[in-house]
Length: 237
Image (cartoon, rainbow, N blue to C red; front, top):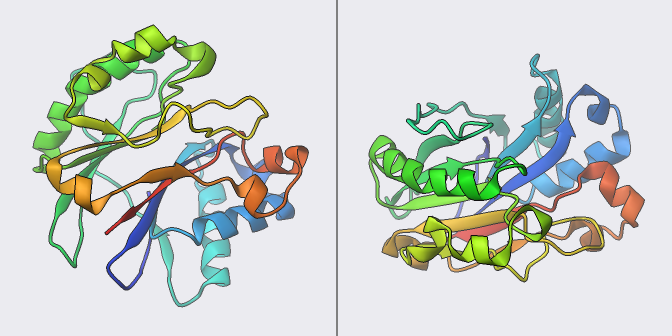
């Protein structure tokens, strides 16, 4: 997770599948400029699909962000990865906790990148992982976020409606099924933000995709060089 020192009582957070982020993408100066603009929007961001074991790519991104905004340093923070009892995941979810300094509210973050081959199976397994994350983070207030592949050809509407995370009304899906989190011309709500806990209903009123293609006036090929996903973002009040 990337975190940036910020002041004030509202912090914008996000999850962003940057699509095969590695040394080759770092070499594309036009792409890096857009990524820097995007991440400067956030006080904290989950960055997904990093493909570089050496960490050179992510460190180059952090350096570029901090050069653009030297007063608010953006750093990569490690997390205590939770060892889940669930074995259904292609990529294990990660749980960590954050505390809002101005309110003292402690929140658990559960980041996940669901395999497109087994969306329903992994999302139902994630329901049980939330219990582990609550215990691990020592809070009932949870934010589930990331590329869940929870739409279009990867899961039917019926299967999605039957998910445990849907049937349990304590979980609020802040990215609606009608939203578009993809850069392609076919609208799909793959990336999601789901919250649990009555306190978060007030702290996180909404979540939305950030359409950087429209914001930065990019054509489709230019946008796809950055990623095939839009970030999903939300303000913590």
